[in-house]
Image 1: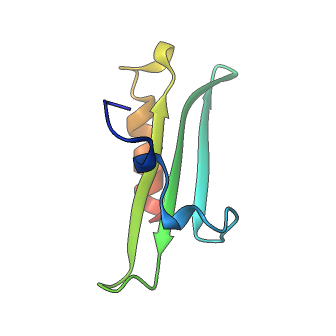
Image 2: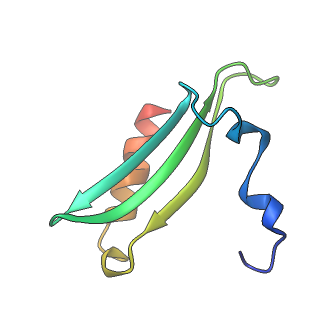
Length: 79
């Protein structure tokens, strides 16, 4: 993506693939997927508890509609 090496799409946080601190969220509007995201909760981070938004996408028809903001606001509450 954006001319970067493919390795930037994964991290050590991706393994194991199922972790209780990984939240996957999908926003549905009008029976369609409007936005998706993944939030990594890192309670034992060396610098203190953290949360990292790893992936985030808004479906083209919903861009500019506030769908992304809605999902991001929800994730901030969960972080």
